[in-house]
Structure formats: C-alpha cells, structure tokens
Amino acid sequence: MSMVAIDLTDVSKTYDKLVVDRLSFRVAAGECFGLLGPNGAGKSTIARMVLGMTSPDAGKITVLGAPVPARARLARMRIGVVPQFDNLDAAFTVRENLLVFGRYFRMSRRQIDAVIPSLLEFARLENKADARVAELSGGMKRRLTLARALINDPHLLVMDEPTTGLDPQARHLIWDRLRSLLARGKTILLTTHFMEEAERLCDRLCVMEEGRKIAEGRPSELIDEQIGCDVVEVYGGNPHELGALIRPYAQRIEVSGETLFCYAPDPEQVLAQLRGRTGLRLLQRPPNLEDVFLRLTGREMED
Ligand SMILES: Nc1ncnc2c1ncn2[C@@H]1O[C@H](COP(=O)(O)OP(=O)(O)OP(=O)(O)O)[C@@H](O)[C@H]1O
Ligand SMILES: [Mg+2]
Image 1 (cartoon, protein in one colour):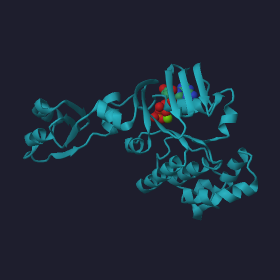
Image 2 (image 1 turned 120 degrees about the vertical axis):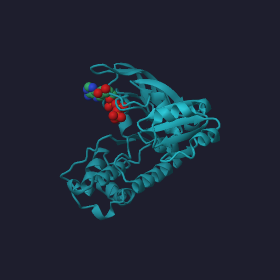
Image 3 (image 1 turned 90 degrees about the vertical axis):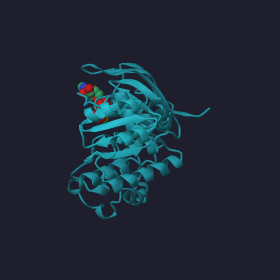
C-alpha cells in the first residue's frame, strides 16, 4: 500500500456561497496531482485548506499524516508553498528573503547560507542575490517564490499556478526541475491553467467546476475517455457555416470564438471538405488535455 500524502474527504467550504462542495481526493506520496478548473472553481481555496490557512466547514483533511487544520503547523514544516500571488518582502533583497524564510523553518544561518547558492541557481537569480525584490521583474519574482519553497527541502510541494507569468524558456526550465524533484520522491499538489503543464507533470488530475469534482484520472485516460479521436482545428472562415458542412463527418463539433474544433474519427474526410477553400487555416492533431478541459467545462467564459 502506498503512503497517502494528502487525504481530503467530503470537504466543503462556504464563503458568500458554496465554493467547495463535498470534495474528496487522495494524493499518494511521490505523486504529482493536478487541480484543474475554470477561474473561481475553488482550486486556491483547496490549496489554502490543505495548508491549514483556511478551515473547511465540513469534511476531513489529513496532510503528511497530520490532521489539518488542527496540526497544520506541524505539517507545514515539511511543505513547500508557492501561493498563486507572490508574497515576497519587496523591501528586502533576494538573499534576505531566503534568509527570513529559512528562519521561519528554524534553520540556522549556516544551514541557510549552505542552501542559498543552489536556490539562486534554481531560480537563475545568481546575479540578483543582492538586488531588492522591488527591482525584480514579475517572472524573476515568481522564480524566487519557487526557489523559496524549496528552502526546507520539503516532502510535499503545494504549488498554485507556479509558472504563471514565466516566459516559455523559464517555464520549460521549471518543468524540468519539478520533474527532477518528483524523481527524488517529492509529492506535488499543483494547480494550473496550462494544460501542457498538467499533461507533462501530473500523474493524476482532478477537474473541478464550481467546487465539485467533475472528472478524475490520469491525463492519458481522460483524453481517451473524453475525446478519443483526432481533432481538426479550423480557423479563418465562418465557423458555424463550416460546421454545417463538415457535421456529417464529425463525432462532435465545438466552436470557440473564431475557431472550430472538429472531433473526427476520420479526419481525412473532414479535411477533404475544407481543402481548396481560400483563407482557411487547418490543423490536424492528436487530442490533448485542453480538449478535455474545454469539453468538460464548456468553452464560454465563466463569471
Ligand atoms: N476570502 C474569500 N472570501 C470570499 N469569497 C472567496 C474568498 N476566497 C475565494 N472566494 C470565492 O471562492 C470561489 C473560489 O475561489 P478560488 O480562489 O478558490 O478559485 P480558483 O479556482 O483558484 O480560481 P482562479 O483560477 O481564478 O485562481 C470564488 O467564487 C471566489 O470568489
Ligand atoms: Mg486560484
């Protein structure tokens, strides 16, 4: 039996309205578990409840063997946190921010000084150690927040949209680093709006909408179950008119803004209808997690 790092059972939370509705999931030690869902679905609320920063109204939470929020302080000593919004001390330097954070974990000056170089390297901020945080770019601050989360060599990382605001190169670098943390046996609870990130990093996912779980499984399983065939993306024409034309060859058609998504068991038939029309951009591709997300949560803007 594998060790359970996070156990949520029938957890509910109400603010002005119900924002988490009898949610249950388990994250095994060593696993990367993703929370996906539209804006306002309740992902950050769950992350905060796991950390004991917000109390559930009902249900039970256990993190690294400790009941939360009752023993949250104990659990927090072995957790690294990346909040959705950076909460660095802007008046302090990069190095000072790491120092203050290390102190919070009761690390000695010597212990902290020993890990700072590798954290600066992780964040690629070697040349900014003595710059004040206020002078950093948005992405640099994000990278510092990520590095800071590792200062106590945590067993579990709770990361709320860790790569939001990072340039593509930095994002790939962080993915690489997170994979090596997973290879070393760390556990990650990750929320993200980047479907590629979820697909690459997560062993399992929970897709939420309005506080409820609407799907759970491995990324590849969800893609097979929910989509299961190739996709033809059509851009540049009237999507509704084109949709009518190719409907006989489609398993399902979705229109999102100016783009038509045609889920087709035999994409050639669809492409044959559309080739020769000028001004159309056609893309045939395998299904991905974005298709799953859009199918499960609808293509319209929430809120
Ligand atoms: N402190 C609070 N007081 C009142 N309502 C709150 C509070 N925090 C969150 N909410 C509400 O709870 C719901 C879920 O918010 P939450 O931040 O968990 O969503 P999310 O899934 O993280 O969204 P996003 O993808 O935009 O970060 C929203 O309707 C939000 O308005
Ligand atoms: Mg959030």
